[in-house]
Amino acid sequence: MSLSGELFPASLLVILAVACLLDRHLVRACLAFIAFALLMALAWWRLDAPWLALVEAVLGALLTGMALFHGLGRLGGQSSLPSRDRERRPRRQVMARWPAALVWLALAGAAVWGVTGNGELAASAEVSRRPLLAAGLAIMALGLWAFAHHLHLLRRLLAFNVLGSGVFLLLAGLAGPVVEVQGLILVGLVVALVGSVLGAALLRRLYALDGRVTLGDGPKSIR
View (cartoon, rainbow, N blue to C red):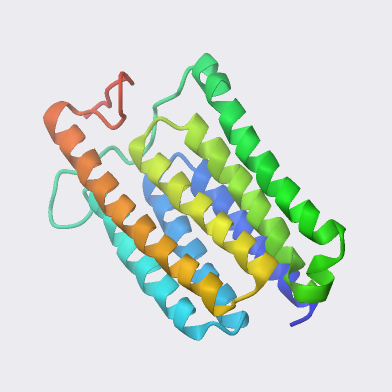
């Protein structure tokens, strides 16, 4: 794999993450996430981890995508949620959530700098994986921002999954697709799927009880 050959898919991953997390039209956001997960599967394939690519396609794209559309009520003839997110978190709440997110991102950036800055990456990993490091950090930043900013539970589920993918890319960029890293990513994919299924079920329950699509004291959605 060449450095230039990995720049395009890494950049496309960031673009799809932006489309998924910024689009207030929920169906489009979910479709963008499915495309993002399929591109993640292609990234694992290009890293010579074909079985991990298959797991990503099944758990990340197919099953998680189905869970998200179930949460929207687009499967099984359920009552559908509004297709557009109109919830907005007060700015003071967003600012209060940023310090922890910034600390996490700073620690991840410091870890990457510590490895790449002293030559360890050049000695232990291919230079062609550096776009994965940059993409992983960018996607983590986007996921942290979205999780702190969004109120809608489905959009927070999207942020949760995208953030996890950023962490996986960071691991793969630092250590490569070694067996231990693939095992960690597999566990992470299973946890993300379970969290998405539970989150979608909670969203359906909240909406059925009182039309709410947020946790806590957020405003109710309009049916």
